[in-house]
Image (cartoon, rainbow, N blue to C red; front, side, top):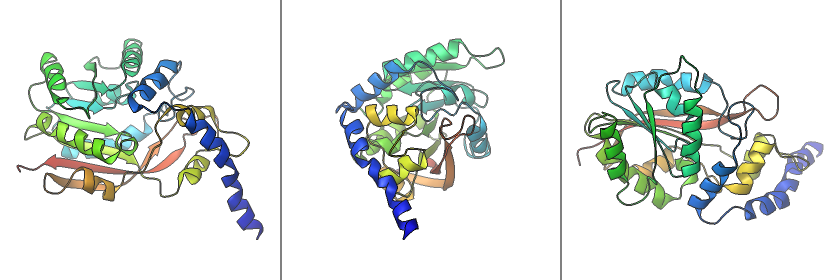
Length: 278
């Protein structure tokens, strides 16, 4: 019985979660731009929940990227945020185009890019664009062409689809197809936490008494996340238009919250996709 009460204790956080999430802007585009406009620091000691400040997660993707994605093609980092993964991808592809719906996010990405270390490559550019909007592919294609990227590209998506509703997931998928040509591939990785919202935030260190600051900022300012696994991928990227080359479980790393140095780990899902001819 004691164990049951201990397990249920975390649900005392519900009223606080309701109050915090009620403050988030109702328009997702405004929410993202407002969130990024408030960010002062990034990396392991920063405010951005999903930026661990460490290469460890990226290194876990390198083998799949090298195996399935054409290294001669540029790559589009969809939902690039502050550009951490854009800069890491630049070691493996001739050009990286980071795209985000938030102008403040792109401004932050450019600032972080300008302050990169001397050993970091410079083959990265950024673009403000809502990739779920009708016609979104045109400005992205133009930006790739201006960077000398040709008319085919790979796609990298991390932590974007799980915060979109089903219609926007489908719209994003439709907009990506023309950008890929016949050689491009999608590598996507998303959080796929099996529990409910209370269990999710508790997993990341939230208690009825305290919520870690990066997590609280996300709850207070951003759309409520869902999960994105194989079932959700089948709906967003239907078999009639997409082939799954490889997929499976992975781990998403966040900024440290329960300790000073150790990233929090979230169960995730990855997939490598190619567009069919149909």
